[in-house]
Amino acid sequence: QNGMEHSASRDGSVDWPTSHDYINKTLDVIDFLTSRYAKHPALLGIELLNEPSAASVPLDILVSYYQQGYKIVRKYSPTAYVIVCQRIGNADPLELFQANAGFTNIVLDLHYYNLFDTFFVNLSSAQNIDYIYKSREAQLQQLNNASGLLFFIGEWVNEWNVTSGSQQEYQDFGRAQLEVYNAASFGWAYWTLKNDRKHWDFEWNIRNHYIQLSNSPGWRASYLMTFLGFICSSLYLHHIL
Image (cartoon, rainbow, N blue to C red):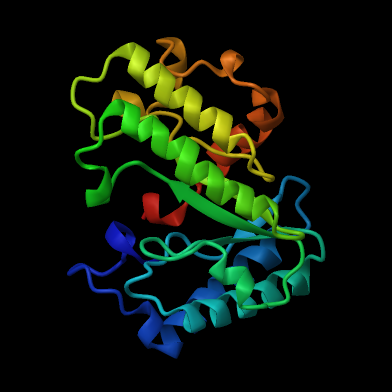
């Protein structure tokens, strides 16, 4: 695991892409996990890596790793979904498929936050909502038009850099995200189910009506994938190490 705060190094350096030994150790883990769980009826898929950094992980190295990881999963299962995470930062999510890796039954994992980037720091509530409808929706339409492509909004949150946002503003922001992210062909997952920060806590948002699922068109189609996402999210190694 590497990229941003998820790097395993104590000093924040990202050395994983610089060494075949590091990459091979990760592939050994994929082999171990897939061989162990490939026949389990509850297995939906295997995600090969979480949040590789665009600034630190070159595309050619990442694609090569994904190709090798894909072959390992297919060695044990012809049907399990192989999930690949986009590079986080200044990178086009479609780059992984433009690389012609030859994958089938693969899912692209997208992490959408109106946070962690200076672009969002001074946006108003209306500008944040406008960004969801104009930028994110356009990107998802582009992905939907890509033949055979499944994509999963694996992380999103009803939080932003707006200070003192009203409940109505949060509701509008959540509604915009649900309306747009429901277009994801493999569903979505909120980050996270429970958290000490209330707007990151899905249960708190539902109980306090900051997120209103029943008011979102097509929400039931994503409901199952949402809770499958919660289960997968709870198993992310970088959050339990």
